[in-house]
View 1: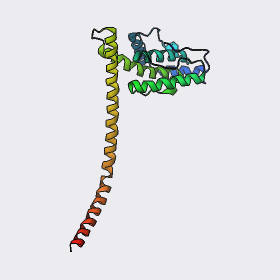
View 2: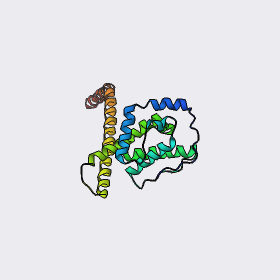
View 3: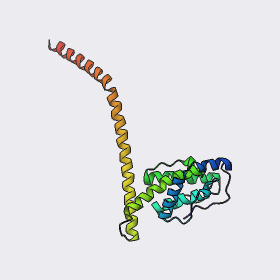
Length: 203
């Protein structure tokens, strides 16, 4: 399934601005992205020229293709003929990428469809590429390969989630330790007060 495009409305950027955006993408990043997409089996050749000016049609096609590599039956909008439809498409893609991989893509950069968008596409392609490479040496039937790939992606998502929980727990522990001095003083005052009351009651 490929995202279908109608006429291409302007994205509010001039060709000069888009050209600067494309130049911000290094040759190494572009080369890595092209090699990854070729290795993953993408059917079109990607080059720097594709992103000299905003190319939403190509960005949408790549996103659609990558997401269907993660999950063949995934449901995402396929109409990108208007600005509203394009916004909905990007929003849906970003949400599903987070659910599938834990990776948070920048929707504004993806919508710009220039060199900055390629940086985001490279991040997503890298996750799929690494997962595929980790099972690439094992001789499996197509069905088994899909299962192994999905298993690796699930493990990756679980690891990302665990790392996030560890960071949050560490931050909470640090905050509690910062407050320990203040809490300790209050606790000692309360114990002294209770001890005094006990002595008075016992006398």
